[in-house]
Image 1 (cartoon, rainbow, N blue to C red):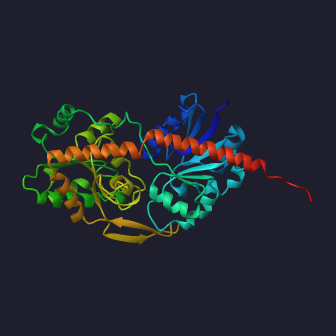
Image 2: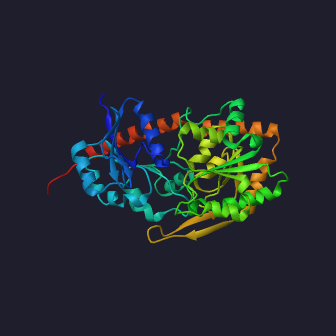
Image 3: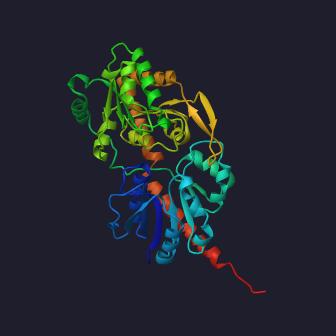
Length: 410
């Protein structure tokens, strides 16, 4: 049986962005099924190398600036004759594609691995949903919203990661790495980890304010916050100046180097919690990665984070779920309306303190719980199987429906 050819439009699959990493995991998993072959248009603002990258015989990447355009897609349709197209990123980057969906549908169906951060349901996206043959949603909230208008073509297929990337290491290794990363005198400190871009949406300033309030609740101040980010990102705040103003420089460490998966795995393992208080978060990969290592999370219950921090089966928490105090209705000309979910620094500080106060037995039990939950609810094998079924069923039905269309001359 010949393999089906799939064109993928998303962040370059060998990049370190969340979309790029997830694209790579998805393609690698589907290739193992033995019936798919992929060509990716790997997006970036600019590339250092525009040569084709052959990952293997079934995975070839063509670097492109931006996310493509109409003429590029027309050439792809003519030269490649794909069996399907998968798009994966923010809708605003694909308006051009949906404007020529009638041309694409002369050749193949369109799949979308989609996420929307928050309610209200984005009815202004319906013109794109209508032109999509399969809306595969990687957050349950997105699935709920899309299902309200498009139940037949919407599926919940969450992000997932192979088990050999983020995993729990031995207690001896944790102690050794903690000593190496933090120093010997801080090896017994309570450690909180934050791995995000220093940008307004991630609320880095409010996170530091929360950390200051938490430290004030402790007597020993035997805790340290590791921030893995660019402290001088133009989209964010001046983190060192805020740390100095709050007088918490002895309790915050900044990690600025680009590190690989192995080093990130160590960061999660030496931490007691991972934090995310973004006011909008479609999914939130760092929290899932953290849970895979057995490290619980303190997170705002918004968007895709909700189903991570709250076990939907019994409403128990995989750490601390912080309910938004303020839902701000915002928008723009392109996105007319959406809620932003804000939590108070005081509530974040209380959530951190709750985790800080757990005894040894409680910490062990919670660690086992979050690791088990991540394995069961965000299974990599299940995600690949769901995508395989979606591609198989949709391509088959699309071809059958297309062949049933008859034209008669009057």
